Image 1 (cartoon, rainbow, N blue to C red):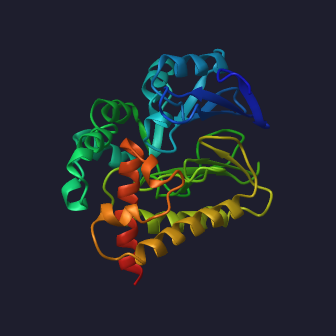
Image 2: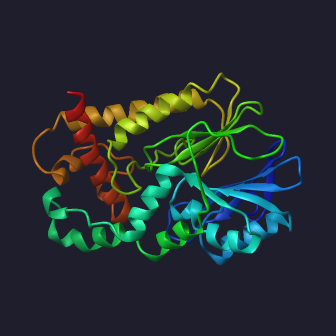
Length: 309
């Protein structure tokens, strides 16, 4: 496997940087993408984690090239954490979807802890879940929020000379997650909305006015419609892939199966319902953030089932 500091060409004028992630996060790297414009500048998608190793990987890949803009697919630190330092170094604007900016400000202000008692979580599991819930809040979110200088809207074209990169709002993973579609080049930058083998967690961007499961299914349909069989997906983790329409269908089927499982166990607490569901690594392997995500998704699926009844 190439070094995480190496930049490799994945399409004409587009290079990928495998940005190292901190140990213990479960994944070795996130993907940053460097897009060259016709003015000789670089537009960067998702600078990655806020670590010295991540910063060095980007510096090596950029090799002094002028950075014209920094676009964040979503607020999570493994995609947005390096934005503040990179913006300070380059003077480049940092852009997010308008719904993600609103979510970031809520998170930076401090979110209420999940009601573990109402979910029926055993008391001995409360400390690890409360610690996991606190990770996206506080100084880290404030730092990213402070670095943002502009917001993007659905259908907007980015100011990238020589390209037509269009914003596609894809709520679900977070409320303001976005993808970027380059129809002329046959590319779509999918962030964590669609990954080639991993099922992304949903509702991981703070409270939402709508149900994240329903939002995600609608977002999958929206992205799948863009694929005419020749689209290459450039995801936030793992490797570029084709067959986006089929992958979207598989992800939708996964969540609809989960909804059916939840519907089959309508009684009891969220904890009791979650224990009955089929989890990729098994229920007993869930802990900390993954357990909290499983419980949140169970609650979201319950709401989704009730809404579609």
